[in-house]
Length: 121
Length: 121
Image (cartoon, rainbow over all chains, first blue to last red):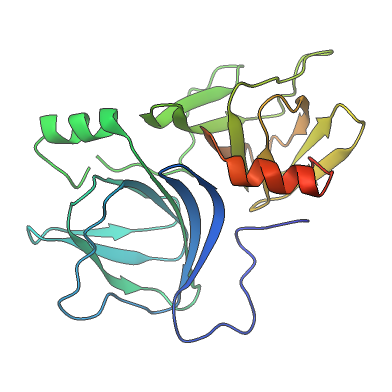
């Protein structure tokens, strides 16, 4: 089986496409394809696991509850500690956004983020 | 702090560059930059953890002990169960190879790989 992160399914629905690429105990690697999708109004992600996420293609904006917005370009990555509320404000359509997300437990990163008092690191 | 997977350090040594991006218990996310590097003659990776690895940029060849070689292009990814001996036969120089590796424990993937009797999946 050959698999490629940049190959976009042709018959994509109107929804974001989330593919589970690998799974362990409290550990998930996902590819997410977004084409102009954004989190619904008033929606915040509030996750039980920490998340390390990279935008591999496209452009996107992620907003945090403190009002800070991060613009992401291809290759940019973020660490999102568990329970850090965030939402996707916008994603590009051409090209579609390809995200790679690793959901797991990263205690060192959480400590580093609190030391800096800046969860948007 | 802004971080980008496709930003290559200017003053790169002759060695591969391995950066630890996030770490948990039995869990590591690394970026590896290879420019024409290959595993030394006779060397085989023989790792304690499973590895999910994607080539994000460049071209590379990975060889397995059974003689099978996989050619990888940007976006291709592989699952390498723990103890599956493998080596990097070649990596491109222009552009340099950018790998994203997640070392962890992925029991489902290991079972799927053995069901198919094909660890090069």
